[in-house]
Amino acid sequence: MIEEVVLDGIVRALIVRREFHRPGIHFFTPYEFSQQLGYMAHPAGHRILPHTHKEVKRDIRPTQEVLVIRKGRLRVDFYGEGRTRLDSRTLEAGDVILLASGGHGFEVLDDCEMIEIKPGPYAEGEDKIRFVPLDNDESAGA
Image 1 (tube, helix red, strand yellow):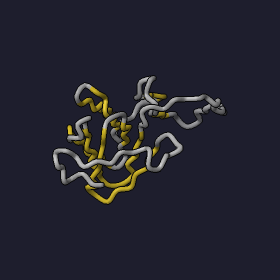
Image 2 (cartoon, rainbow, N blue to C red; image 1 turned 120 degrees about the horizontal axis):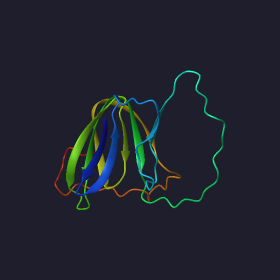
Image 3 (cartoon, one colour; image 1 turned 90 degrees about the vertical axis):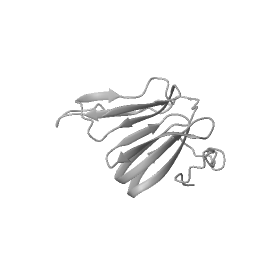
Image 4 (tube, rainbow, N blue to C red; image 1 turned 120 degrees about the vertical axis):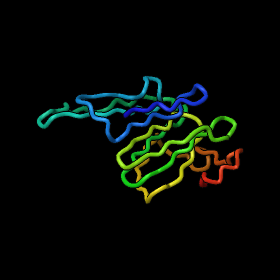
């Protein structure tokens, strides 16, 4: 129900499948990830104390993003430093993926709705490097 996608010895992604259930609080990401991903399940009547978050200066490298698949199916392709596809995973409604490192591309397999979460602000023109896969992978969209 939790899959750590390790390719070429590097953690590329963490996938939390929709079947995952565990009482309490469970964080999937290691301390050093720039994006933290956790799961919480509490019974009715449980209270989380009111709180605010302190202003903390962070140096966010690399940009990591989370996708929450709400509807449909999505294939995620993982790319290595040489811009060749290393592997793929299929996500379905209810699955969550944290893209931790390396390149990635997507193909929508069934009409898809998803939510993307990543650190901001987004720097248009500076945040991404789009590329054509070196293995001429026609299935990877722009």
